[in-house]
Image (tube, rainbow, N blue to C red):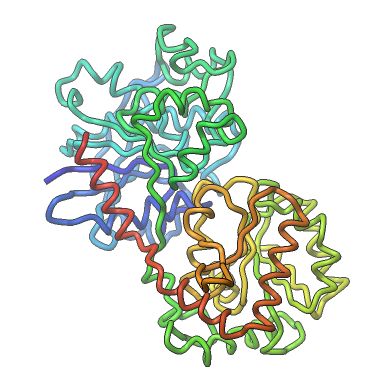
Length: 478
């Protein structure tokens, strides 16, 4: 029995701000239970919903020397869907209405958390074979395992894996600050270790010291070795390329199942979508006050409204999109300029544009089910889950060929009738617009072909089961 501990700053259903939480909360239950004992550790945030805190079992507490003080570390446990979730409690670090607050404080918070996680293991009497770390918040754990914890025989043969969900976020501050909060010696602050362009870098520490490094798609694993995508660490990613794995994220096929989804207007599956899927469109049109027309081509976006998501491309051609024979539904929050842009077009073309500048899990399911196509023109996309959810719901993705988008969406080829979506290669607004027009024309003029694209998309398997098998392969070589 191999013991695995997932360590992250968030995980569903307890706390979520992005795709990281979906991975950490969903993936563990898909491992072979006879061969793997997988557990998860998270911070015990004050903002975890009360209904979960009521389930939490207090285990114990201890005091840990951190930054020349004795700091309280409380340990709680919740069993969720057969997986033990441990929580590290400290009111000073984990209070507040949100999991992430001020960046400077967050650095110290997660430096404390990284040390507390390792210190808690003997107290919990759980010795993992592999500590699987996620993103910069846990970047110090592989370093600590090779440093101050190495002297203790309990930790000596524990291996570490570092998964990068988005290389853009690295946990960077001045060397003196990172050195102080990490409690590491001068030895670690050189360009081949935690120093990066004269700053300290917590994610870099994790990448340098982990036994294996993974990213969340094959294409992104190749892209991060290039300067454009490497966020200043492309040289390090090339240096570690023999230990770098690209393992595609999946989605929870029970949570995202159009045949049983309680949030959508009309359930359907791969057999019945031709007859039933359109009822979701008319339901959403009515709810949003748009023109009710089941035949109208509807495009959806469910996204953080940021430059990374390619919304500057949308902005450049939004007037042309709005004058086409289609409807456009947007759900999400983000940069003010994009929020206001979509609000403006909603005001100007309300029958055909609906800007929903908030986030709602229920509404996201309705958009995935109602739309004919789903737009994701990202500048870069380590994996992306929205296009996978779209395929599951028979909603045809229109994507830029980067990262996980390239790995999951096969471009439509009208000559040999293959493909599961539409894609474009260059980061160019008119190339994106061309793909939208191509999709729209296929929808209106080649409906049988369009339905075959949906058939192929819904037949794809991007469940966590296949991802878990790849991670099992990875753990077996450690």
